[in-house]
Image 1: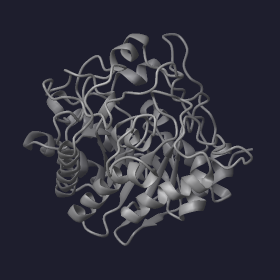
Image 2: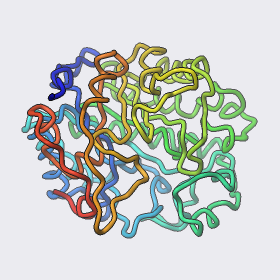
Image 3: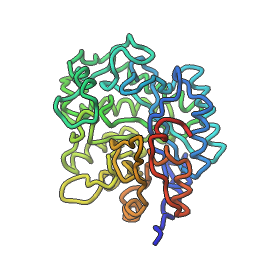
Image 4: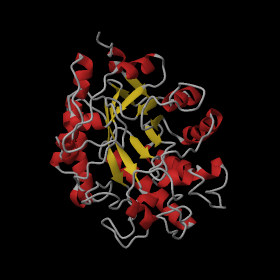
Length: 386
């Protein structure tokens, strides 16, 4: 018996500025195909194909903000992360945006600062020191997918960020958001999870500061809220801002910022009050319970506590989670929509973020509508744009 996917294809209004044609979102996934930070025609074609095939909203791969330590080579064989600054990169993004719009789609850039995850001395600005709120990468001995030699190299403490450096990064996000609006993007997405810069301000294991950017939850959230407010000043009151957050970190899969729903509501309420319109609840499996004693997912709790449009993300369309990778000889099997539609029908979340499945198959949304079988996720899909 086929699953009724019609709720996925209902429109969604965000603020007074943007209507999405459906609830399917291409979740951000690093593609590493923008030499010198410039997205080319292959990148434009890659995103346009998803818009041509019924994806309601595209959130790009992580894009470096206008700060020299924003991104490096953390785990990447070849440095080619796109920038949101510089004449050539912005011209490239204008081509990407124009192509998506011509196909009837909508697109946000995911503005990114790797923070502690950047390898010192790497990237296009190797002399820039990496940014760490308290000089701490993360606690040792935790469950992680990172290679042991990488973890060993990252564990020694460095100098904490100064307030002047924090102000510089806030300004970098604001400039980059202004650039994104100027080239025609429909909204702004911020990567606030997975152990990157926003996240290590939130996490008490990596934020030991005793100034206004540390201490209690409000202090640890202040860097994020100041960035959000700075972006809101640049893009105006109506342009949507999406914020990705996670409990888990690359440094520690079992990490938590909020141990109870009340703590989660307090944390997310700070982001909403600062100007966030859409919350992107990133989990390794989208329907994993958010807290003990309830089957409600993290996205479900987020929607319940904030009332804001919420996206569920985490292995939608696949049988295994983010850190299960396809081998040379074996693909990761596709998964149907039964679980997604059950949760959506119950009102748990408004948007379904699809990452690896949409990397593997530009026509994933078309298959969701028609009921055709989905394609598996293969090693080939990770190595090229199509």
